Image 1 (cartoon, rainbow, N blue to C red):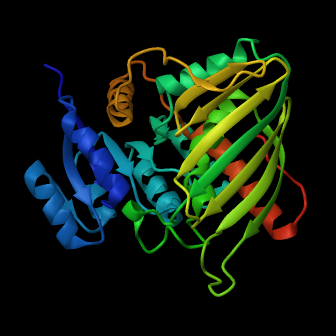
Image 2 (cartoon, one colour):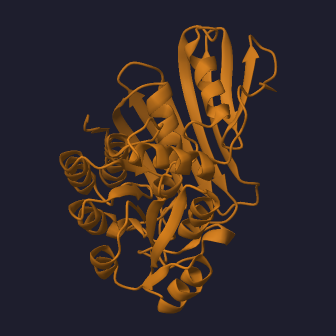
Amino acid sequence: MTSPVRVGVIGLGAIGQSLLKAFTAEPEVQVTAVCDVDASLAERTARPLAASAWTDYRRMLDAVDLDLVYVAVPPRHHHAIALDVITAGKHILCEKPLALTLAEAQDMQRAAQAAGVVHALNLPLHADPGIETFRRLVGDGSLGVLRRAELTLVFPQWPRGWQQNPWIGGREQGGPIREVGPHLLHVILTTLGPVKRVWTHAEYPVDDLAACEIAALGTLELVDGPLIVVSCLTNVPRPEQVSLTVYGSRGTAGLVNWASPVAASGQAPLEGVPVEGARVPSGARLVRALVSRVRGGPGDLVDFTMGVRIQAVLDAWERSSSTGTWVDVAQA
């Protein structure tokens, strides 16, 4: 009988707790240890799982036999914790964005590859049937010559109600571009190709120098493909909107509500497109792929190499916002 994959979780905030449910729902996984700087939270989370509770992740790594560690802490801590997890020889799943800077992300990628451990990024849109349907619509030639793409992000409140924490609204680690951007950048990079350079303009609250952007406009120039216009707006009396639209010479394809594909031929209105394949909850899909990879089998994961490519775009975006000029994107 195959032993369960032993998992440790570092960081028990909203995102960590969400994926923890997917781990505990998988029969092939045993959540063995949890860690958070809030001792009470760690104890409350560990008790029903019969797991050990820790406030020092280094002590947890030294004391507990683990196969896989999920790093669900704020981005500023990803680099140091991930390197310790990798040095301990554990397979690793990390939250997005991969790191705070491109240099840190590259460090993490090199360390994971050198150690030969499974390394993955938590991007729930990956392998979603709606995304796969959109990718087919864009790639099958039916749109004709691709002319332009538009990414629109609208949030009536930022931080959103479910993600109130000390950092998500801060300029150093948070903000909608850094927090939501990786999901859609992954779709763009895998559907339309690599980004060559970036121009952006961001607006910040005038009375809070530590706060994240409240609005942003930008342009992504692809290595080979259409320009992508990005519009981000927060704290407006509109429903949340996360959409990506690709315009071609013969038709249009897009994503609405994050992952629902739409399309139109000619001047017809956009209409929903049936999704190909059964929809499995993203957490379950990710956990099953991780279990298979940890055991040496196949598994469709977003690895740290893609995390570095996404980080390169985010770094260029932030530098362009500071300089007001086009900034080249480092190519991984």
